[in-house]
Image (cartoon, rainbow, N blue to C red; front, side):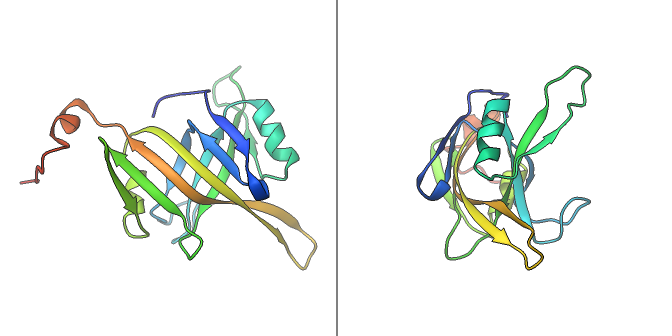
Length: 166
């Protein structure tokens, strides 16, 4: 995916996040179990490119994570964990491959983990929670996403044809 600091972030009705030109990392749309994830939990992280954006999100209650950069003298690495739960509220996930758009469902959304991404736009809804212990917070849930797949020159050449594997 192309490195970009051109991300556009705005706040919509009911504190929804509207994000264009996003960069996502730690993709686990499949919900596979690993060191950082329970089996079945689908999620990813939205990279927050500037401290100003991170501060604006934090002030609105979003759970922005901030890590030191692995490179000495590098900028902080900031991201928002986003959960992906399929239910009656969504999400709607669209994959655009060379102009052909498919809506992905719970079975097919895992393919996003494996593809090269040219661009991403998304809407994220908040879920404010509070435990009996008094601990509270805000979780981010994917509501809608538009992913444009970046194709290599050979895949792009044959994308319009129905080329089948041998």
